[in-house]
Length: 149
Image (tube, rainbow, N blue to C red):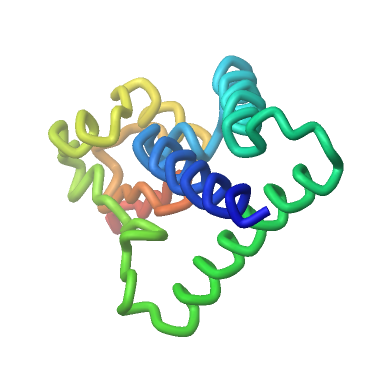
C-alpha cells in the first residue's frame, strides 16, 4: 500500500510538471487532441502507479494520494504563499504594453500572434494597437486593458 502512495506521488509530480510545461494557453482551453492526450496519459500513468493492481483498494489509494497532494499544494499556496510563491500558480505575463506586442513573451509562452488577436477580438478589442496592457493570467486566460483616448 505504501508503495502505491510513493508511486502516486511520483506520478503526480510528473503530471504536474508536464501540465506546467505544456503552457498556460493549453491549460486555459484544451483542444480535443490535448484532452485525449491528457486522458491517455492518465490511463498510462495509472498502470505505473498501481503496478497492474486492478483491485478497488489500489485504485482508491492512488486517486486519494493524488487528491491529497492537490489539496496540500492548494493549502500551502493559500497558507504560506511565499513558500512556493509563483512556482505553483505561475505569475501574470505581459504580452502587449502600450500597443507594442512582446514577441519574446509570445514565443516563450508558445502563443501565436493569431491566438492573441483572437483573444483580443473575444474581449471586443479590434486592434492590438488599442491595447494599453494585455496580460496572460496564470490560469491561461487573457486580460486586455484599452488605451484611454
